[in-house]
Image 1 (cartoon, rainbow, N blue to C red):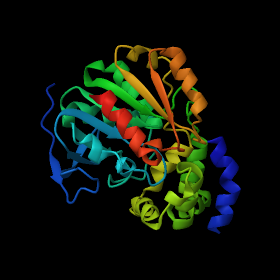
Image 2: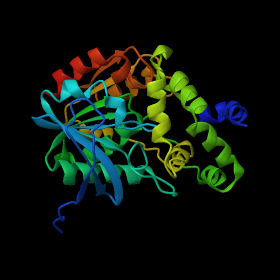
Image 3: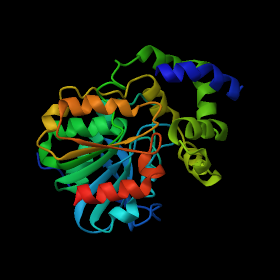
Length: 308
């Protein structure tokens, strides 16, 4: 939040009972390598898009929170992991191909949606790979519903030192009820804003920010109301504190991968996670917010070894 506010002047300038079976709506085609089917399903009262593929023990991939984010984050990992696992890759409510609504989103909403996805769509204990703030949601799920989660592989997770501040509903109101929100939305959803986000926040190697990558993020933000999850995020409504829940996951094998140059969630934050769970191994890979992409070969090797 503080980092966003510090950047705000530049952004403004630049922009002058048993559950019933779930009904799914098939869509085509899957966008990720190794995925063979896709559908929409309602979980936690929210419609979400997901893709599946591969065979073996189940693994769910949950992307991080940020403007234009989606399951596309895992594009360089799905083919490798699908060789040994049945993969489920979802777009969180309001992100990617999952529709958004003009409303305040919360961490509880996302936690409930992911929990119901694990219980109702996967339908069996599963390993979960989750990035950034989604890692905090999955930690809470693993602590409260350990029967749903067999392993945790977390990518630059938050919830101990980062993204734990209380919600700021006043700022959310300013974003949604004043011209300020329109100005910020125009910047964040346009190509200049997306390029800024990818080059400064997501990728360490700026040469990876190609026109094709930028287009995916711009397209993810193009449909109605896509600004509302982002407004909720920068208003701290999505924050989650896992100080109590993280130690409760001790019985669940866990591993952490961190980007060496993550600007929003620095790798130094790994120490707090290890302090509460000394059994957890941390691997630092070259990259910023998504080392699973920038160091995909190393990440895939770690993930395949850990998830077996």
